[in-house]
Image (tube, rainbow, N blue to C red):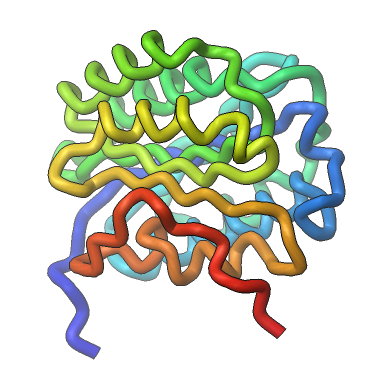
Length: 212
């Protein structure tokens, strides 16, 4: 149980709350699969270091809504997304921009800054704009992990280019999860987003067979 050096981190989670979240190709629905994964991420981050903090926001047709500001209280994180109702289209860059702003105002400046964004609907931004945005985040020392699920084939090239732009010394990851008889959070457990450390699992993180 030799834990890696405890990273002190502030993480903002960006949830996709677009109409696409009603789809049932990631059981039970994309929205509920995402909520389950949020609980996993919140638990993993707050357990790995008691001084870590996590915040949550959604992006949808209603704009960007912050559900929980940065907190180390796992209870606040667990229940925060229950009232989310899918609406309209998500805006990934707007979501990450608000997340970056929240991280900038974190109380403990020793915390590293990380955004974990769930993308389950088409990304409208063009690739060049995403790459430019990624470089800006890198310059501001913000790491980004993306969970690419639902519309994952359509978004793959854009998201890969974005992560390559923001990636600094393997601190950012793209995990692509095709639909299947698996649970989203089960696949995330073995991905670099949760088991981060020295395993350096690069960008692929494909859907590793659907368990039993």
